[in-house]
Image (cartoon, rainbow, N blue to C red; front, side, top):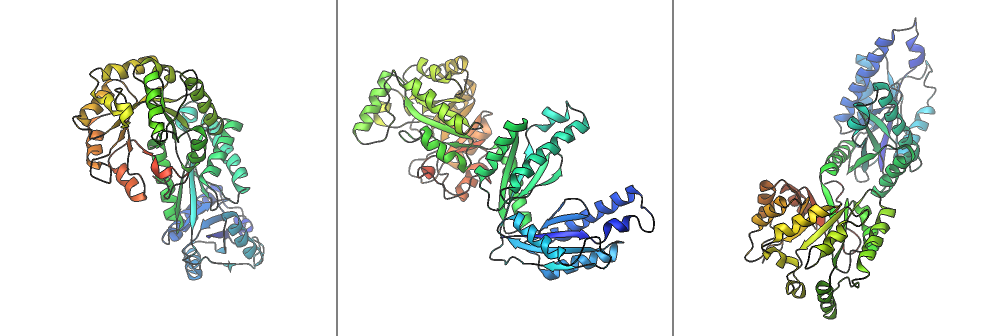
Length: 482
């Protein structure tokens, strides 16, 4: 449950003009000083205060008890020419909690009553066991390039306020709140909302007013921890690429549309076999009971196009990748030019015997012309190019392959960092590769828990991919805070 505190300056309207009107600059300084002071007081208990109209403020106050509130009131009284009254409420959603806090304070008298002074009206307090805060830090994508550097200051402010208005209108319907926190940034206490709820709202706003937003979501026992995790999530969302890795026979559009809302930025279709030798190899794999995609040569390219369309129609902001294998270059180039496909991924990682026997999968790493193979794809496709490799293949220097992929012009190096005889990814090798190349590195293998996800990120990768851990359609850990 979330706890909200309403803070009101007592009898503020009449005070500003008694015995005569006070200068506006003095009033602005008073409001700014009070806002800073209150954040200091609440922040000492890991709370967070937001201005609404400056003479009315709202705070997420999980962790503050009745005596904490009384102590804050006394401190303000001793140092300011005004006093404050507060109402406190706790509920499942932020909107309901602030409503309870407001009603409790309203029952004590009017905000402009000379008789109502330093009231603390408590409807309810959240217990330590039930304390939970979820917050989303939302900001405008590339605001400097799209607004600040090309529009006037006031027009930019108008667009930021417009985004705020649309966000508030949509969030309040779901029981969430929204506060402007400076620049192009907003903080939304949003207990009860899913990542997909936030994503849907941002997509709607982009469609309605042409303002693209991004968000990080954080959770914690108190406002400070939740806001911090939201900030981290927002920053890493800009730089950390979250990929659904290819799983033959599994990662089709239907599956990907179900798991993308778990927090993925890139959804990988495939792996697909694109020519006669690889299609025949896939059939042999299926005959021995292993899952594979099986499409005739005259259907496979249309199928991939339809799968791309299916994902884009539901998740327009997600990049779609297709992991493919072929004995020659042209089929891969053809896939790389499929409309709306964002990434074509050359499969240099499959280790099935039937695929290796025709020189594909990880056997591609032995090709003397691998660099030319990759560069030919890069030079002739509209999409970005990824190369997925398997690490620690016998007789192959993984570091050399990483440099080769980079020098060939690929956009991404996707590494299954398996290490023979070890049940975790080769973290040390990943760190070496990340330090040695400038290409975007996507780490794969062992991302099956918060602990291992942190290990993966600590290697310096630009992103991570998940396969088996999401095969059920769910994840046992949250990837949106990393």
